[in-house]
Image (cartoon, rainbow, N blue to C red; front, side):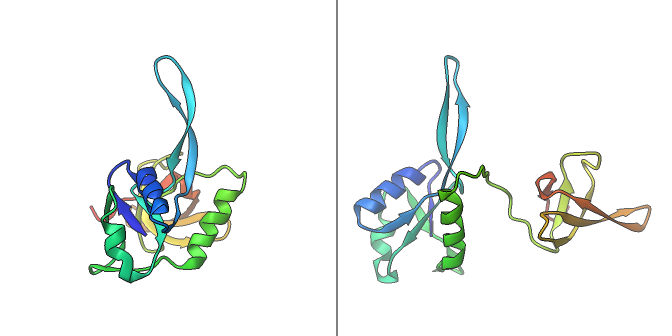
Length: 160
């Protein structure tokens, strides 16, 4: 996977295809509004990133592509995205289902409720179950309370 310069995802995809590099750029359509009209525009599902499959020995050819900022990895070493994760996103992109970007949430994260009657309440994400419901621990008057909140209603906040 490559990290791109801001708003260069499509340029990177097109140039990598021209260099015969296998690419995948999942897009999501949204309505954009200007003063005189509205139009559906395709935006990258993951802004700043483009999937690319290539042998590591060809990394300079990829890094020298206009708009490529870096390769994604750990400790300065490129790491491949697991095929199962890419295949899941490709399958989603081929469907007619409505999908949108969503923040990555994992167990143990400090989160804040942003919508609903508990807006502003912070807690720890304890469990993310199959029903796309979250269980949060919220401390009220030095007591623990557990509440189920829809994942779209919480965001990661880190430590204050």
